[in-house]
Image (cartoon, rainbow, N blue to C red; front, side, top):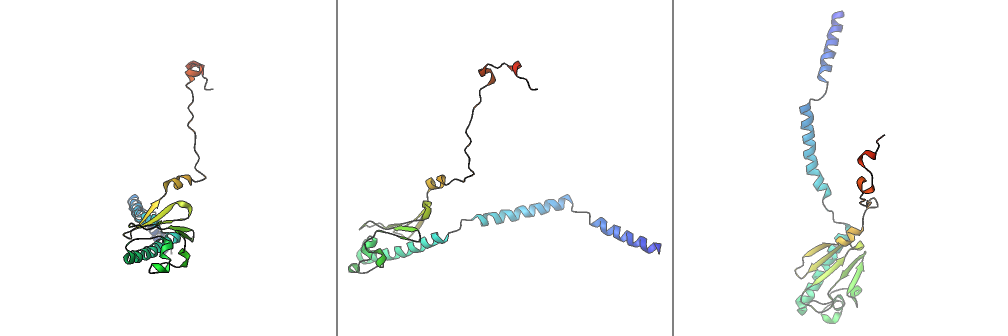
Length: 183
């Protein structure tokens, strides 16, 4: 009977000796694996996401560009939104919201079209907050312009500016090296 118990204890001891932990090499391999996963994951998580408002602005700019382009192909020049809304110009190319206006706001985005008759198209979409503008040109290319001035103004409430204070040298104040006591 004692023999059986010894064998059981020896079997337990042998099993426990294999469960002591991971070696340093195994830990380094695990750490390297985690670093590689993070290097792959972080850039994809930080990629700039287009907001709903920006996507709306881009879609509206495409629509306005198509309407301006149709007017251009018929009349040989680009024109203001107000002119595109008139039926007597072969249209209307735009709906009644655009009658008598050169700019229109929708969902917080302000769309600004050409001021009048022109050969070069430029339609601007100013997004809410003034942090970004989207511009479409005669080629149909949409360009995003970020406003740095507005970004600088929007600082975190935790950004505290610490003044640089220069302390005078002890000798300039009349203190000699032997006068200072450290106790």
